[in-house]
Length: 447
Image 1 (spheres, rainbow, N blue to C red):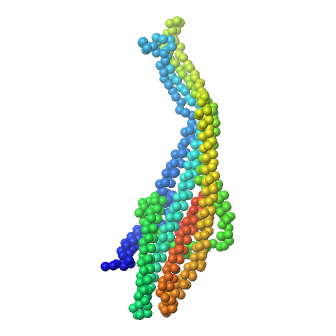
Image 2: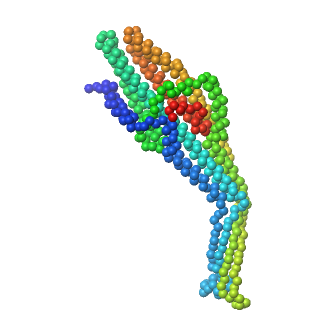
């Protein structure tokens, strides 16, 4: 027996709807501000970057300190026939101390280079925090859109069922066609299939958001309901849209000075400069100073006096005799690394500028589209549907056009919320690109 597609879809839809209801009942409402706080407090990757910065901060003191001194104990000139400490005049028990002294300025350069790298690690932590906030906002708004789209589809299913009843009633009374009933049932089945896809997308988005918040992937997530009255700031005046270019220029200037990623790369350039200076200092010798005291025992046969102890001092230095294979190559290496860091910084600045341009363009387009949907497309779609429904009830409009008008209104409503989500995601990307936790104009109704 052939089972219609609509009948095959109903069990799956029932399961998904039941699961969604259970999740909604168990989950606490998660506002955007709450999601951001959870991400900052519990994201393990952010905690790892913080510990790395903490570890890097301990390095400058280490590399800037003198090498550990050495102490020694020696038994010198022991006669092998008796191993006596009193038989020979030169026999002594010696205690020594030595200290390596790098050429002046080397330790300071090492410490400065390590300090710049530690500062770069701290900026890396701040950059990761910005990216974490950006991703949290993006996935939160994706969930907000999916929830709104699912709500619209569920409401539309009720409307289509009413259209099915109207078409079925007209068919039974001889005023309609059977194909109208079948057409309405087909469109209803398509809506059910679309709902299934949106539910699956929501599961994926919720799992991703939970990972950012440092929670188990299957933790229930409920987003507060959104309404158009909460989004009044999405309809800026034309004067505000015209100032976008100057705002973008200001954001680029801010990013060049404050974006943590660029600051970290500038720190790496400075560290590379210090290591180049250190490579130049390696042409100069390092020193080692030391002192020793030798204890002697017994009596000197020639004088009959007690043998005196010996004192020794030492000064040694390294000789860079192989500079063509060591110091020269090391200096070339450090200069190349400095140039690489400088080129990487320039490329990063260009990439940041391009990132700001893209996000600002997306934000500007999304704002205009939201305004267009809110003030033009959606009101027109609703008027068209109402007109079609009135005409169909008096047999002036065929059923196919009525269904098309109704579905078009549904789709436009979903597209509106898609643009709202896109707008706020663009704001999140623009803020992160500029090196800011938030832009000046932020929606606070749900925070």
